[in-house]
Image (cartoon, rainbow, N blue to C red; front, side):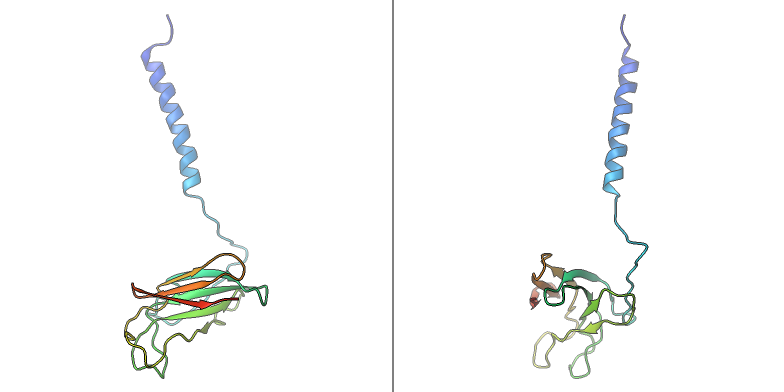
Length: 145
């Protein structure tokens, strides 16, 4: 007589556990550089860091972070309280070296709570386009190296 039905179930259960443990270890993997952490700070309440895109600038051959802050206060010349904003940040250890990019003009409609910077995306290739969305139905192509 060969192995009984109980041994088949144990062997299947062992195989299933092995497959699940391999899948789980692959699914929860992430990559965080703990030796050179890049921290950037923004205005409290602005949701600074809501979206982030890493971009390579062809002119300088350096990398830039584009950081969205969809609840940032409007710039002084804009007739609205909060428009949101997008910041251009070099990849450095300085936490406060980001500069706000100017995309909002006083004559535009939909200025108040437009959530500029809710989504920031880099095409990925060196010199590719960077896109910024505001609210749910606007898209701006704003940077080309």
